Each structure stands twice: as structure tokens, then as C-alpha cells.
Length: 499
Image: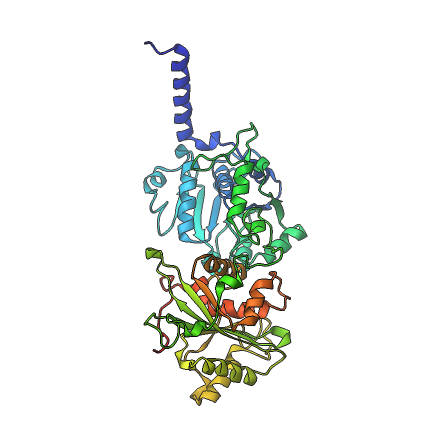
């Protein structure tokens, strides 16, 4: 049977379209409302702010850079000569993902043969100096936010694209200086999570940065011709899909992760998964898996300390942790064994006596602890001497243990030093704890820890809540797990409880 002429013509037209799109995908791209608002904004300092994985933020940034380098921007006049563009990513792995997206959108005839030959999916545009070079000499450099600001000095740039919040304000400021001579643009695309964003919010609210914020609605996921976007699996991103996405996150995360709001908020209890009837166990320390006479299960004893800020009411929480094995599907298990929560203001010496007494009441010595983390250095952020600190507490403990030089083993470390332990750490740790509570037998609390139990039941996420101090002590005790160090992303099991 002969193929109808109309079908033959349709197939030919489709083939021509696909071929043209492969050669110049940029010319055929149709933007969503948030993307179009970002591209068409006349501001030279602009922020596109939406939820995570909605709105096409990274794609919008990629196309912005390509329009500058091909001199085809439909909404603004760009320099006629070669331009220098820096695309700042959070990490190298994220940079590779963005380079793949950039490659898919790039008109291949616009870049040099060397650039085309150098690109691979595994290494992007080069592992050492990843860079796209266009025929007229324009370039897009891919860099990470972890690089020192001094590494950025000397460059003269026309456009800076920041994907996700800058880790340090100094990096942002240094890059702005690189735009001074050219009068170029600074663009951010982000979800306000996993970094300190208060200074970005201040810029937006003062008008120094044009804030283009879009909540997750069906309208923002629909193209001008009425086409509804689809996920990579083919699911329509409609109202029903949005509701399913909202159901996947904890309620306190929803404002940021789904709608791109500035901060997470809790309406009532933050630890939604906490159930005293399920998670509290009498005599937990005598449990055969955890106690000193246990059956050989190796656990690390970790202690967290919060100094109570102005109230000076110290809180301490002792946990036993069995490190998880993700490859075997075995999650970490946490047992909260003891607590010390001062009923009123205390001195560092009083705190040392109380913590050692708590340990002794469980048949434990300080030397059996694997790690101790507190929330404050000897001075605060402004360099002022504080009334309580990790160093002063450690010295008091050392005196009582008869140790020389005021040092203990283990040392009292800061819970706020290290990757993911600064801005955003609070909600990162809350999510981790909620996930432990969701997982059967992965989070248990001794019934004697009544103050912590009440705190988990009532804390609403605010900093002034009376339960905040003991919640922080719990978070600090477990900091090595919800914010592991760079040593392979795992906790070195250097000290276990003595049998």
C-alpha cells in the first residue's frame, strides 16, 4: 500500500525540524513564564528564584550565556565584540551536569572545532580549564564557588552567571568588581537552600538586586502556546503533579523546596515523625544492643553541648550511634541515652560537674566518648569574649579529670566548623533527624530523657522557643552524621564503647 503524500510530507517536515533543532537548538527553544521574565528584565543585577527542579532556572542561565556569546539576545543589547562569561557552580559534579545541559543547547556551528572536539559527557569541556570558545573569541568559563576570591582577581568579565546561592558573599563581591570596566550583568538562579542567603535577601529587598520570584503553580509550568511541560519520565507537570511533589517533602521544607520562598517555616511541631509511644523505650542503656554488657554491637558514643546563649542554661545530650551501611541498605541507628538540661543559669564549672555525673550515672567515663561537639568558640562572631565556650568547658572537665594542659581526650570541637555546618545546617539536620524517626528502629530515646522528649514534641522551628537549646544539643551530638567531613563522606569509627 502506497504511503499517502500528506504523511510523506509530514515525515519530511518532522525530519527537517529535528535536523535543524540538532544543529541550532537555541533558535527553537521556547521559554516558560519565569524564564522569559528573567531574560526580558532590564536589570543588570537579577535573581530568578523558584523551587527546586521547577521553573527551569539552570536552563535559563545557560541560554542567557549562549545569547551573549552568539550576540543573538532578543531582549537586550550585548557587546558587539568577544565577551567573557563565567558560569559559577556549587561543585565540579554540578558543573558537569550544567556543561551537559549547555552542550545540548549550543548551536554547534557557533563554537570552534577545538571546543567541539574537546567536549565529552564524562569530562565536559575539559577537566582542568573547562571553557567553551566561540568563533568570534567569546568564551564561557565554568568555575566552582569553592575557589578562593583571589583566584578571581584580574579577570575582566561581561557576564557572571551564578547557579544556586553563592557560598560566600566575598566571592560574589569580588566577581562584581570584575564587571566594573564592562558594565556587565550579574545573574543568579537559585532555590534559597543549603547556603546563607540573608545577604542576598537584603540586596533583593533594598532593590540592589531585581528579585524575580515564582511560586510553583500550573501557570509557570505552561508554555505560551498552552503546552504543559513534562518530566523526563513523561509525566505532565500539571496541578496534580504539583500536589504530588508537595506531598513528598516535609511541611516545614515546602515553602523553600517547592515555592522558592526565602525561609523554611513550621506550622506547629517540626519533628512530624516523632512519636513518644513508638520512639521512647524504658531502660534503653541496658538494652542488649547498646548497654555496656551488650552482645558485641559496636556503637560510637557522642556528646552534644549547647550553652544556652543569654540564658546560660546549658543542655547536653548523649547518643550512641551505629554507623549505617548505605550499600547494604542498613541505615544509621541512633539511641539517645542521656540528657542534662540546667533548670537555671549555670557556670562552666557547674556544667562540667553535671555532665561528668550524667556519664558516671550510666557507668561511663569521658574517655569512652568518641566525639564531643559544642556550639561556640571562645569568642563570638564579633570577636567578643563569651561567658561560656567549648574551650572553657573542656578546661573545667580536664581539671576534674586531673589532665594536664587543660585538654581532654576526646577534645571538645565546634559543631559549626566544616562543610554544611553553617547557614542552612539547622534544617539540614532537622530533615536528617526526621528521616531517622521515619525509619523503623533507627531512632530511639531513653524514657528518662523527658526534657528532650517534650522538646521534640513541641519545638516549632523558632529560635526563641524554650526547647531550642536541648534540640541544638541533640543536633550537635550527631553533627558528624548529618554533615559528614570530607574524609570519604563517612565517620571514622575511632572509638567505641568499652565492653
